[in-house]
Image (tube, rainbow, N blue to C red):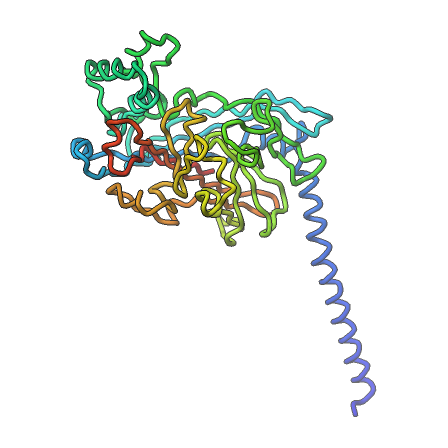
Length: 415
């Protein structure tokens, strides 16, 4: 039996410990709630606020890196051999994307704006100059051959191609392939079709231009709606695809997200480049530039074929013409050019595409699209969006390519 003074002392210590533990538990519960509440309050687009200024003129640099697939055996390909390509890159451009023509609507609940993008070449971050030469598929020729393959005009095109010495493959400067050049075949065809643009580039007329007017939610009514797209080009949905679900415009444009993101959330994004919306789910916790974050990645079902994900049937264009998993036919939104999007090196696509082209080396670390984001205040966003442009071989000449697809370019967007 303990003496009374020691019993009192022991009881006093116990009371103090219980009190301290109670205070700590209260603080642990209250402080995050206060922090989250404050973060939610400032995550609103208000004219003159710091949040608005950062949204209007993003201070963090964004870079676009382009990797070309240089074809090394054009003659053999025309004889039916597999294409052999060598990836050359990166060719890096700093992307400037301010919000302009900003107008607050509906008592500040929505914000209308344009988002012009300008690209400036960064030689010190590139493997070479814009004058480097790349041999790749002749997309203008393949496009017109496909467009007129069943018409009388097809024979005229063949004659012009012979006279202009236009083949299925051509060599062009990096800068011209990206931003545009005068094409000999298109120039000759312009005599028959004056409205035809005789210039072509993979991103022709996409430098120092915008992709259409946006209306965003400001987040004033619901913090989770912060910068979510309400309308694009005056429309609440797209019209390229065959189902309402596939035509939906969901999420932000990927430059910002709402505050206090949880691991259980699904992040939605709309990309006019991809001509569709997509989503990403939590994968793991990461550290990026000494900032803790959550990594979100699009699950494989986003680009899965209809046998895996029936909801993707609307992306089969024309209706019923469904591609393998990982491929998206965007010809409907790219002026009917036979262009198909895929992950770089056909990552997570049918293995036959990897095997049909020498030089494909798909791997998760280099070719997965991911979003790393600070879950509380969105600081330290690192968005790595990876995609590849493929030329669809659908013309009589192009059909000699064994794969039916030839990768032209890989694009990395980091910021």
